[in-house]
Amino acid sequence: GEQDQVYSGADLDRLSGAEQEAAMRKGNIFARVSPHHKLKIVRSLKQAGQVVAMTGDGINDAPALMEADIGIAMGQTGTDVAKEAAALVLGDDNFATIVAAIREGRGIYDNIRKFIRYLLSCNVGELLTVFLTMLLRLPLPLKPLQILWVNLVTDGLPAMALGVEPADADLMDRRPRPKNEGIFARGLARRILTRGVLIGMTTTLVFANTMWRHDNLQLARTMAFATLVFCQLFHVFDCRSETLGIIEKGLFSNLYLLGAVLLSSCMFLVVLYVPGLRLLFDTVALDHHQWLVVLIASGLPTLLIGIRRLLRR
Image (tube, rainbow, N blue to C red; front, side, top):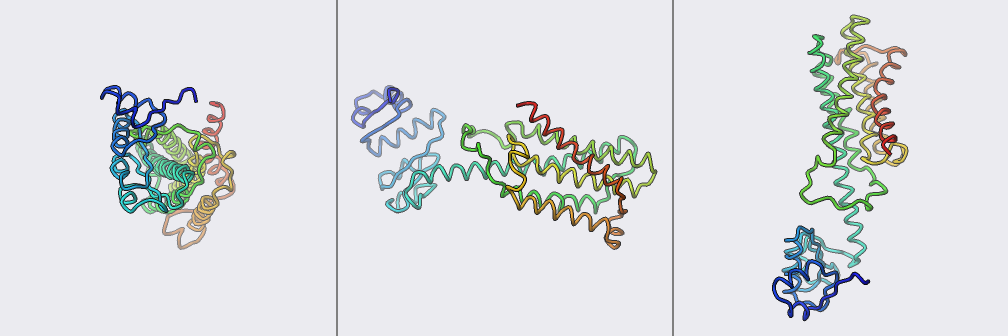
């Protein structure tokens, strides 16, 4: 194209040191360059703050492959030396595989952020529930065994299912993230705290309301337990994407997550309605009206965040 800056190895040799550095940083195409030139080009681009990927197959490519942020060797035609020097080996020698690998890497990174977002926001909600009830001079809203259940069963199964969440459709349209960007960048910490506060306030409100209306600690704890569990189960659907809503992602696009939520819900019902486990967890069976309160309160934070996301668009 008209904007392409093309240099050959001979062109680079005719330039002074400063001119050569400038050419290496603004050039689009380098033809007939020596291994020494390749190494200098990689170093120059890295010094300019670029993330550099280098492909190669020969012995002479090894120094540049090692110097690059991502060295990529050909798996079929590449030499053993090049493969040893590279960070990535293309088994099919197809450059399109590089794009597929980038997509896979971005998807994994996104899922790590989703996993962290879900677990930490749930933990913030649990801590805030205890803290708020202490401020209100109310009894502890959850017993230790109930908290353990929430952390191991309610949180654990959906969190693992988030690890296999399909990548967003717009994944490859995004700009590359800066290499020095932290895991909590792009508003992740704010989302964790915001949702954690909503979970904590909702659970505390249900607990306090039940205590004031019924003066029954066992019932109030059961209501708080149920509200916290279902707040977190609704919340996991909001964690599936940072940009897309639940409808856009599709409810059935991650069957593992759907199965984990259903299994966690069924196991919680067992805790509430099997006499031996009910005694162990110090819970009581809830009636239809109480379940309605729990489900409305639990689903409200997810609904509000979904509406806010739509309005911001």
